[in-house]
Length: 108
Image 1 (cartoon, rainbow, N blue to C red):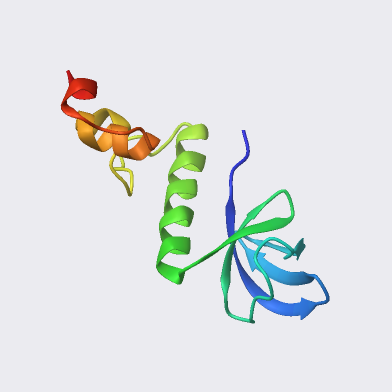
Image 2: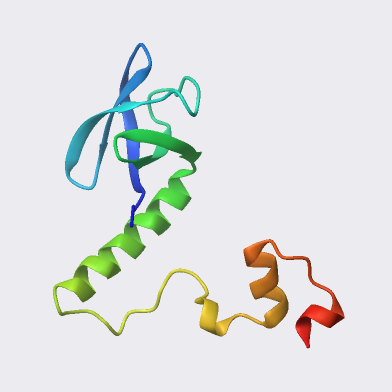
């Protein structure tokens, strides 16, 4: 499993960005997202920027990663996720989430 880490762009190099996030600093490839700007937030997978995200989305991802780290450490399991869990979604919402066409036949 690969988890995206939100990181903020600090500086640029040709084809790369120097980013910081979650207590570390990394040089990441930017080929998939084009040229970012200092202050942009990126979602990083394996030292490659996969997506530009808003600072609000970065905060949501960081909060979720903090929750996962706490549970992994054996603490904080009672906190609520920052998103609706699939087990709480309606059949229509689940189909939309998967990209499946949703008609009355698929819901029954």
